Structure formats: C-alpha cells, structure tokens
Length: 608
Image (cartoon, rainbow, N blue to C red; front, top):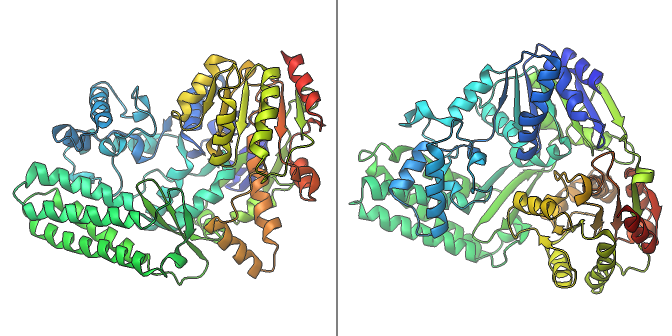
C-alpha cells in the first residue's frame, strides 16, 4: 500500500485502497507522505481520528523516519474559540439558561489559559454543549479583518500554521467547505496541496452531496436574531422598533417550525409546497425578514457592527425565497424536522461529475482509503460514486485470523425483522448471550425505536451496567463503557463506525438488522427514481452497496487487534433467506459461521 501511495504522490495520480482493520493503513499512507518533498493534505472522517493522527500516529512516524517536515492540525471554524463573540456574550449574557451561563464561565476561564483556542481542550465542554454557538463563529457572523480581535484570532493563526506546514491534517467537511469557498472566488481556508489523502473515504460520497447542494435552516435565522439582539442591547438600546421587529420575526420563525408537528420527520419538499398554510408561514417569515432589513438600514450609521448583520439578513431572505424554486432536474428537494428547527435541502442526486471536475481542476494526486470501500470484492461502486478513474487500486485483507478469533452467528428461530415480537426475541436472546460474555457487549441498531424497546427490556434484567446513546455525549459513554469493563452499550448509526474498543472490554457485537436506508427517506427515493430512469435496478445499484458498507463498519467494531476474540450476532433472517444475503456475507471477514446460538454462548464462555 505504501508503494502505491508513494507512486500516486509522485505522479499526481489517483489511487483507491481498501485496507481492512489491522493492515496498518495509517502508517502506509503517512510514511510516503512524510518522505516526499510535496505539500500534502490528509483528510479524515471525524475529529476523533484527526486528533489521533496528529497527536499519536504522526509524532511516532516523524521520530521513526527522522523526517524534518512541518505538520499542522486544522479544524473547521466551529471548533475554535472566537474571542470577540465570547467578550460580547460575557458582557451581555444572551440567555437565562443556567447551563449556558455556567458553560460561559468555563469558556471564559479557558480563554485565559489556551494557546490555540481549540474548544476540544476546554474541559467540561462537550461537542453538543449549548454554549458553543455563543463562543465560536460561523462564516456568516465572522467579522474578518474588521474584527477588533483579528490579530489574536485563533482561526487565523491555525490557518497561518497550515499555510506554513508541509503536511496538514484536516477533516472531510473542511475539505469540501474549502472547495466551496474557492469556487465562489474567495480566498481559501487552507493551502493548495500537491496531493490529498482521504482516510475513512467511504464517507465522501454522502458529504460531497451536502456540499455540492444547498440548505437552509431556521437555526440560521435564530442565530441571526440572537446576534442582532446582542448589538441592539449593547449599542443601540433606544432603537425600540428594532427590538419589536426581532420579536415579530422570532414568532414567525417559531410558527413556521410548528406547522411541522413531528420531530425527526423527513419528506419531499415538493409535496410540502402544495400545502397553502406552509407556504403562508414561509411568506410571513420572508416578509418579516424584509422589514428587518429596512429597519437595519436605518441603523447602519449608529454602529459599525450592523453592516455584517444587514448583509446576513439579505442573504438569508434570498436563501428562503429560493426554497420555492423546485423545478431543476437532477436534485432532490427534501426537508427534515428537529426539535426546534426545520432544515430544507437541495441535494444533487449524483456528485460523480462535479467531484471528477474538482480532481481534474486541482491537478493533484488523490488517494482514497478505508477499511470498507468494496462490495462483493469490487471497488467500482465507490469509484463510480465519485467519478474516479484510479490508476492504482488495491484490496488488502486483514492480517487477523478471523477463523479462530471470531464466530459469526445467524440465530435460527428469530421472528421476521418487522414482526412485533422481534424486540422481545432480541431481549431474550441478548440476556443469555450477555450472561455468557459477562457484559462486554455492543448492541447496534438501525432505529431509535428498536434501541429504546430493547433498552427497556434489558436495563432492569441484567446485572451489568447498561448505557444507551443519548444519555450523555458519545465520548463520555465510550469512556464509561471501557472503564467498567463489563458493560453493555446500545447505539444507533454514530456507534457503527469510528469506535475503537480493544481488548477485554468488548467480546460481543449484536446487530439487529441489515442497515438498509429507510425506504421513505426522500433523498433515497429521488436517487432510486433517477436510477430507474437510467434503466438500472435501484435496489441492486444503490440500496445493497450502501447497506453492505454500513454493515461492514458495524462488524468492524468487534475485532480491533491480533489478540481480540469475540462473537458477532446478526439478527436478520434475510441474510440466509434472500438471494442478496450472499452479497453481504461474502463482503464480511472470513469468520467461522454458525446458526446455533448455543455455539455462540459456548464460544463466549471459553473466552472468559
């Protein structure tokens, strides 16, 4: 793999490598990157992997290779403390929420101690902390060179370090955000590179869809209202009309959210626009935004902080007006509803052409790697999804001895996956299995509903600690799971990948069913219709490959080391009863297989 990567860097070629768990793929791309004399950007799928690469893997290799290369870590804007916004919100506390007030004090203390402003280093502030929108900046609310704290700006300093470095570690979202900015003619966030290396590359097609599309969220309006209110209270409190206009807009935004009753609902935006009451709610928000724009115009000479807010108001009004423009083909128009927000998305159905243009335009080397890129032993699905024509391709099997280290069990006598008795059957089976494994179990689900039903059935009935996604942040739950050493953890999508538990803390993974995307997902529906128009089978071309890669990620949680042993239990009869089941089984590591749950229990008892 290292030789392939070295050649791709030297020739500015494209290279795709599936390297299964345990092959040492991180070192296989870092070594040639450090030995080359080129500027290289390494992009990862998550902040956790970014941290691990920069703080653990890179220093080891730099030392081993005696490589005198400058390295830098660059995260997205939201990860850095904004000194200007912190001072604004400490002076005028934006809310009476005690959590925010307490966290604001913690961040203010952190500001006196930090050298790099990376909020991940602020103890007690998790990724989903309520205070974050008040102490970081967005592209919308950043004042740039007009900011009084511009010289001390942590984002600016991080970017300068990246410009000066030979090797920069970023993440996929930052890569695409940067390309979007370059496309619009603005200065780039990160330097131009000779080669780009993407780890966890299986995530790229989905992330690319988000960035090549457009989206609007009522959260953007709520943040605008909060930011204007701060300036109103601090600088122009006598402008009473501004205060009233903000209150009116806030009510209109809240009313717009309320026309969508269900949290978690998703759907086709074109269908929604057929409803007059929803269109009326949007027009009320547009009208109130237009009035706010007029009021802000009269305040321009009262405070120099008004101008960027004035421009944001106009930009958001334009974005909201665009949600009525639904006639362009090749896009999915869809929405999703959060607890307090509505998001509207315009997403391209195919990013292959756009991504291929990007690769062509940069004239750089592009290297893509992950443990899960192939379907049925082929890399075509991944390459086609991004329009790649790789010069170098490689499939590397794991060096682990799965035949002896792991057992795959597809239990007999389970109900069909949508049967009402399924949660009860999983609980009954899991109790026996967890007893044999003495806790130490991951249970991965494709839906929150099933996860909650199984949690209710298990939590009081087993003598081991049971943790469920949502009870705390992902990092804290994982730390607790490892610390106890005999715990059970229940999670959905975010726990299927990027979770690395080695050794004795984990010896069993139970997966409830094949992770097919929900058939009522509006983006999937639009892609399937598009696929049908091209004369292809959407189930075979889209749903199966996506589900195979997702299942491989979940299965990959079990064996992380040469000394790990464990049992994988898949509770979905379709793996045996449907012809496509073979595609999934062929794509999984070569474990010993059984349909007898007692064999799985014995295997676990022997481990212990």
